[in-house]
Image 1 (cartoon, one colour):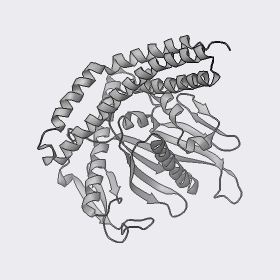
Image 2: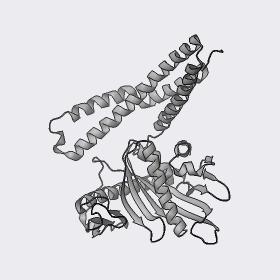
Image 3: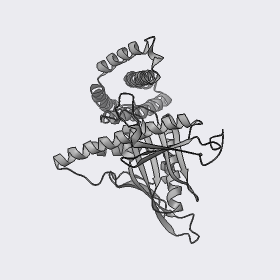
Image 4: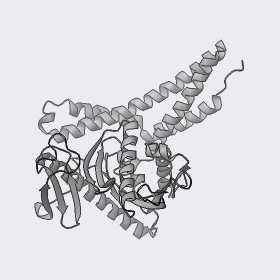
Length: 366
């Protein structure tokens, strides 16, 4: 049996991994972890629950990142040993195992490399995602629900905790809108490339003539606020309305006026939350989403000023960015990066990694 030679591939992975380590700066990250450990061990830490949560979350994220880097480093060394052992024993099964491990390492290092591109001010944050149905009637509201399921499936596959905060159901099919929180490191930086207008083309299941229908839905992604953020909202700037939760029943959520709607009067931004049982909990969650949206609005205004000063205003970002075609052929294509696949079913089931990676690289080079 011929020896297995993966030296070229391993050398390329080592080079990419070295650049990742350089960007992450392991020494600085390790020092940050020690500082956070000291803060987390303070006896009065939980006197301020929000601050305690921020410290422990940051510590967990930093430890997870450094553990992952050390794990990849160890696996690269183990792979070389595995190949030597496979060649020495002439074992086809071990050679196959080595090839599989190489593919897994390439994927993991690729993810780490993309993560180093997420160096924006809020990229490391968790995310608040809102989906709204656009033009297209029942097809659009059905499409909005398909997109919500797609992102929740993506979060589930990547073990990113997600919580639905609010859903406005359509009288026909699907949903008018939905807001959910994805609480995971770099969720905002990762999913922010999904923001924009999505288009679906298919044979409408709501049209008795079976004609092809085009429908639209908008996706908004904002960073979740943290305790250190300063987003002052005077009570005089908001109007709070309470109402009974809608949609499927269960655990008394739609039998009392526990749902909360907050309107930010200066901007007209409206946020609703009906996920929690109590009115107070829903108000706290809604205020957090409102602050997140105001924070994102401020960030966009600052970016617009910078682009105006630089004379480099691009109108493409944020407009129609992806088409999902189910008829007369099968294709999902990102109109910014030209990345496409011919398996819409897999995409709607949460297989978004290729689109997100291409989007992050595209945004960095734009």
